[in-house]
Length: 84
Image 1 (cartoon, rainbow, N blue to C red):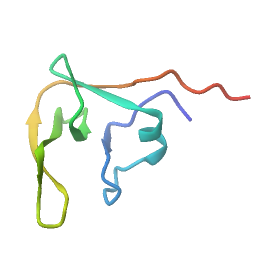
Image 2: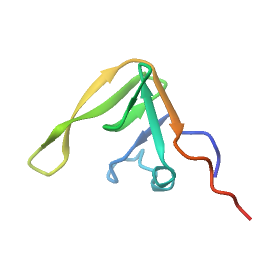
Image 3: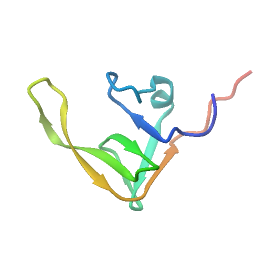
Image 4: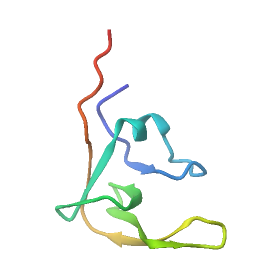
């Protein structure tokens, strides 16, 4: 596994940008200089994040989201696990 994060990542398993291995490792998002914990999806090259809006869900049970533009900085929360 590499130490670089993809340009776009989603935590929805139905999305083509979903990657379970990266999400298990712990990905943090710094948006406009502030750490965000409610990010559903991000894109670094286009400069946006999709944030969940409270605990509201749609009729299919998916969280309602809002797309916000600005500088996005993804990072790993923990150091990589040592491989032997």
